[in-house]
Length: 258
Image (cartoon, rainbow, N blue to C red):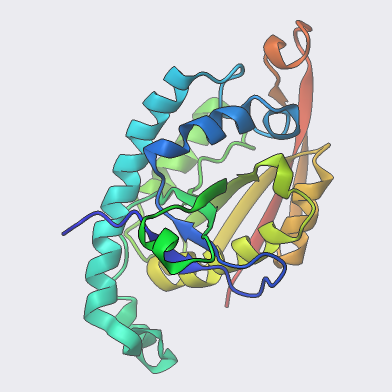
């Protein structure tokens, strides 16, 4: 089974920029990722990536996410080929749920495809961000033992179990901030990835308390505030001009399906 690196899902419900797609990560995304994760408009709203972010950081991260994406892609292709168009018919839902992606993480990139077909066939799409649905890591639980217990419990649930708690993390490169892209992307991921291929019923997301933009994105997609955890995340001195001990609160929001 060949690894699909091209488009997987078109972004539904967004008209301002044509040809926005979800696709697998590509090694050639490195320069754009490095630039984004060294921009304060991005890194000050993210917990995970190191700062400064280097080419070596990208190479190591790409090995990890490309493997996860490759495994999801293999399962996705099998499901998609078996179900065909009927798999998207609500009458086939119960059968579809028997064929789910087993992986716990699906790293996806957000891309703009070129207008010309020949350029699309050559794979010349532009990276503009990432979104990753995965089983929750419960970042907002500050007690480490309890956080690990909850994660192990959640990870131990069988694929498709409606009690699995999923989460999404995302960012766009700053040139595309404020255009309404991310709500359309997130709605697409929930409906056409998490529900359809993972049978998700509960999806959570966290945001730094100063990041009102992400909070608005989540609200537009039907997420509701669960709690605000004060002083949850300690920022590294590299992000605070050498100041140590600075912490930010963490907002927790949840989407719940039928």
